[in-house]
Amino acid sequence: MIYILQVLFVLGLMAVGYGARKRGVVGEAGTREMARVLMSIIYPCLIFTSVTRLNVQALVANWKMPLLAILLSGTGLGLGLLSLRFISKVNTQRASAILFQSMINNYLFLPLPLVLLLWGKEGVALMVFASIGFELVVWSVGIFLFNRANRLSDSLRMMLGPPLISLLFSILWVCVRDLFHPALPSGEFGTLLGRVVILFQDGMKFIGHATIGVSMIVAGSRIAALNMKNVFDPHIWIISTLRLLVIPIAYILLLKLFHLEPVAYGILCVIGVMPVAVASLVFSERFDGDTDFIATTLLVTHLGAIITVPLLLAWALPAI
Image (cartoon, rainbow, N blue to C red; front, side, top):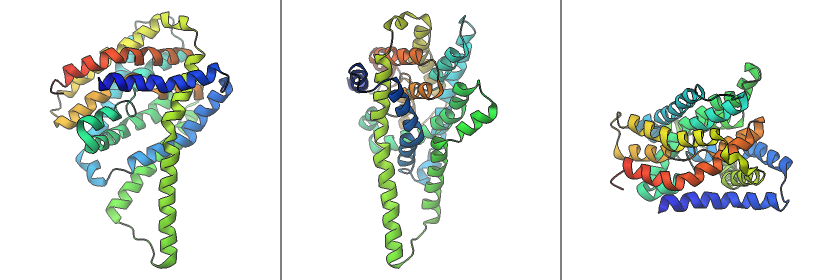
């Protein structure tokens, strides 16, 4: 039941954006601007807050987690590429959307409550650490997919945008903090500097907390503008089947080959069965992608996840 409630909660949050668009509170231009602010300011703050919760010991002890997250992305990307060989009349925008949504799913927000319920704060920390692998893929390969029509130099410049810089800075922060234990100067200046550091961290946390809310408003706003005839597009059902069934099953079978600790295995299974990421819609808004297609798959896969997530986890984690 917890799986179903969490997916319904996400759909409920999207309904806020849906209602705002229908009532004229936000329009197409406003949705695009929110997506830009989300990627440039709000989401980088969430990355910093999430990564700096960890310590170096956790990074070293669980080094496999980000790599296996990258494996999930690679599995999805490979199956997405394979599917494109059998799909006719796919333009660059549609192909980019299919590949991105095959590669990246909802790897943080949606699985978080379930991981917290099953494995506590230790599990959440491991999930956040695993998300580093996804972030690296999103802000490298993901940028290239949505921007591949432009010059390579433009794609590289966008890769080195605020999110990836925030990720690298966060990892550096953790390493310096835990390995070198820098001490603040004594006296009033040291006290003032310490206060500034605390305020900086609190500010990043407060701004980062807006990520979920703004993402859901953007998603709901785009869904409100959909022509529901798009649901009958066969490409929608191809990517939905890939994302909800084919990719999770392939990934879980791969995970069984690694003989992981039960907690690490369970967390990666939970992440692997999730529907497409809201981030795909934000990317599409930012880079003029096939937004209607992406918004429709977002809706269809989250509705489908109400059925597929419990069934797949009952198979992958029979002890739950």
